[in-house]
Image 1 (spheres, one colour):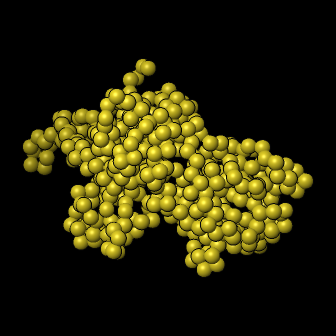
Image 2 (cartoon, rainbow, N blue to C red):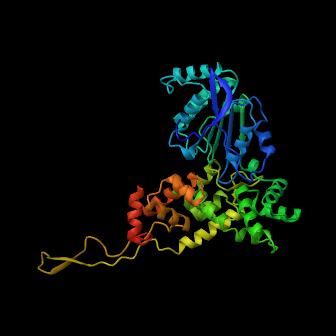
Image 3 (cartoon, helix red, strand yellow):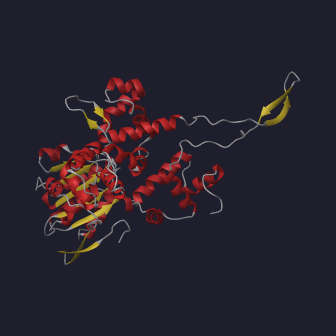
Length: 438
């Protein structure tokens, strides 16, 4: 079995054998949210379910809860455990369900044969592709064609931090499409209260409402706040004080949201954090013309932005994300963009006029500065890279997900201006970021 499918033995009998149904088990302290399950099932004949929202909004947990309640076979592929494309992951999922792909599934005829095999299966099948944030246009077309031709025999569920490139208009017209976003996944006050109670925190309804409003229902933020409240039971903290003390909120936003963006989008987020409302005119003031272009497509990226009711094309940042952006903008503005360098005398030569000329040295004296400073978590990952730990071992050591470690590694490589882990460790030693003898 490929290593990116964590398979739990199932009970559905397909093609004379036992199918393997993959559904992640509920984590300790998981809060059941039947409201989200009902939203997924709002259109029973749906063939495509797309869940797109920023990090920490509970996409995977919500879909896993829905999948655990299915009576029909389901296979699950998690992008964090895979280097495969979305299309290949889908094929492997189908194979675990007893559907073997033809020799050339990327050809039109091969896709049609695959769809016919799915239709011949006894009962509907479900495939979940979790966390595939970068689905190529070619894979998107193949997945779209497969879902369409398989009819009601296949339900494909995609969770992602950005909108997939699958053409959704046909599915909307045929009423075979369900889409959930950040506003669906946000905790309401009742769910927030239940979560805090589950964490051992007993707050009055008014305090829960205030905290939930401050975090705008963000699940990860509520969990981080709950840990602070559980540790400070004797102290009556306001919502603002709780969020300020929950340092994990900013660490999470920095690693999983801000530093995971393309450089131009990252610059856009920092530059526009000074605005209370992001309008095209104001964005052009602080982020030039390219900022207006980014603003036009920002809704597809699913960063923490809220559309302004009655003001098309205008957005605002939730206060918890805006505060992080402003603090990071101030911090980075104090870092010199050009490293100070001292030239050392180079070899001498004689000019055409006979004067002795000192040529600059080929290499400037001094140590280069980082493109951007590394966060404490990135420095911790860097130390583990020096110890030659694998991604999975680092995740286990730091008690974080594999996907989080990969995000940290990408940021380390980008900030150090290298493309390989060994090169990052070597440069980090030169810069004194890690001890040479650990």
